[in-house]
Length: 131
Image (tube, rainbow, N blue to C red):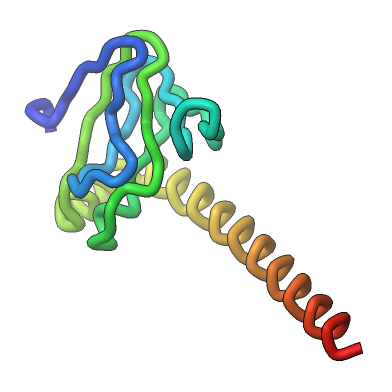
């Protein structure tokens, strides 16, 4: 996987929201900021460090990128660009696989919590409307 290494400088976009490329990245060195939106509308949703990963959804879903990934200082990443290579990587790196499962499960739990909150809001709005 040595050929799949890329380097980025401070402020450089690794992923641009709306792009169609299919790569998951693992940070080998440096820090990456994940943001939604641009300019005054920009919202920082994560600050990642060595050993963290991002862009994994693109491996499984054929949809445009939803966020930006921006290098904070000099960054070195390795990328995986298909499901087959990801499976091979996870089999060779079981501790990373365990970390990935924990992070993804945590993300699903947060998404579920947000969804349930929205369902409750809709129910309350319907009750108020029908009252």
